[in-house]
Image (cartoon, rainbow, N blue to C red; front, side, top):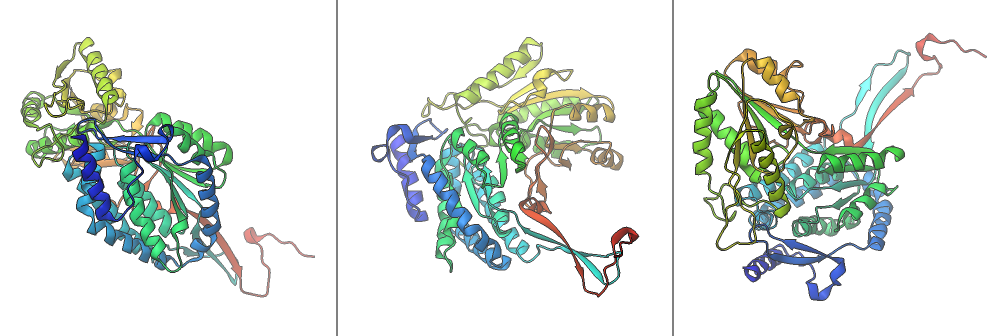
Length: 510
């Protein structure tokens, strides 16, 4: 299987016209990243890590072009992103398959991730003509105040394995169209996806007139490469996606330098299923939100609070749905759940389930499903845990397909359970009651950055700002006015008269 998958990777890179990374024979063994597919655990390719000297040199190149890139008209920057989006459209099937091979997510989700890249390119093209400031009324006669937005400087992006291309593209498209140079440190688990999509962007930038290829850099490596990015004084903004523990390290490293951060960290997301809910709709939404990407999304549904009057029948239907979920090769059209990323993820899942059993909770599923053709991979049956109270294990994010089920009696009780998590990313309520929906989305409701009604916790669109509060980090990416995070605000006052009146009526005469 390994040779077949390696050949498939080679075909994808040939189709993209992007250079395939060096093989183990062509690069020193201690400087390699080993890309292994979760499908069967086999080796896809060996990729050379970026040497420290090259990382430093690339920052110098970025700094040398930053001023010119910032001065280039924003609509012309948008045109380059339009061309990149066209290349992504052309190669969507190949890129979607590559995402599936390197992450193990099903092909539909791999293709969906590439579509997110295409969508954010389209968004950035429109944004390139809408980086608006404003004119502000001045209290002084013959004065005008105005507010403008200007490029911020070199932006660094650190991304995670579970969305190896889309989350970077959210940052890259917006940062670039806002006039910033860019450096990307992807997950060490997904270097092939990074090489492929950055290679397409690099081609567009290099083919432009003038050549802008020096405004975007890719660094491959482990946490030391990310640390170098965070600590480099010339990188002025760090957007980091990953665990809360990683985000704390980034924030602490950036604080002494007053370096701006955009943190997209963990999530421990909940849904409320009320007595008035459309249960057919809720069932489908809960299923996808809980098991999509094998539970390895920051927006995965992990806690479901179900009104006591419908708890038993709804849980019975959930169990039937869970039993029907097809787990297996993510390339197969019928598969809904692919493998976990690695053995460590499987072990973490089993520890959480063992803790639940020790508390007396009822656990359904969670067992490893051995695949005859893929003995080295970690396929699992998604787990349901029935409990009558919210325990500490439920308040920890386990990056695996575990859904905790708990009854509630009053809406405010369920809202308090939702808000008890230290994370504050995504939340949902299923109800046909206007009162319940509006209360949940109000200041008295969910404390998350994403609050949905009658849909699950995952599947955000690029048009809205994405992110959350508390241990989720507080950052916002993608749409709405998230672009302002990548720019600096300038307030200017122009005196077009002959006098010099002072604000607040202050008199100062010589």
